[in-house]
Image (cartoon, rainbow, N blue to C red; front, side, top):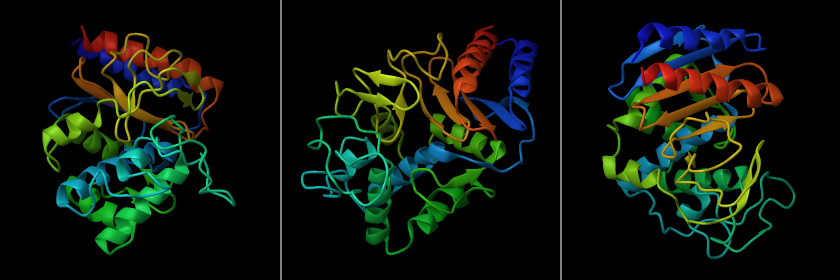
Length: 281
């Protein structure tokens, strides 16, 4: 690793066309390798929320509150289908929120609605609100003091780069779930399903794990051109992302206050490639 180059690469996020940005690079051992911006500033996470919800789901499965095959959502759908965007439910809630657009397991339909149903299922099984469950299962043990879920389990959390750095460390060396549980969650669930990756168009296949979006061979993509196929994570429409690249032995968090658009499509892959080049020395 070239520490000086990594620091310079991280700092380039402050040149993005946003009012505020905070980024961090976290090593596989949990050490914060580089930062830029205010690490304690709270940002809306948008769909990066799904990573927190997915991880809380892993805890719920290990605790026995739910099982992967627990029926949830439309007929034939399970907890596993919901978290993998394979339940057939549509993108957003509304009057037709539970209108099935495909049979479970046949298409990858990115679905906030599915994550809402997932959260309700866990909440009913645990006997508490999903926000409380996530706080107790994830935020308290990891010390995510500034992280709150105040809305949708798919897009309603707010957090800081400092908190998400701790979470990124957990995603590389889990302490709340067994390593095998996380390993299974970042493998393809329901392989070979086509679908649309929001902001980047149709992907065939549109591979996804259990709540974690998988880089694999997708193109175009929000990670870098040199990101390994094993990279997993999520980005949010509020201008946020978190990726873990196991081959590089590191993760990165980026939070901004400008909604995702063409600026992010241009800036994020370049930034990621610069970070990876510094990590690889």
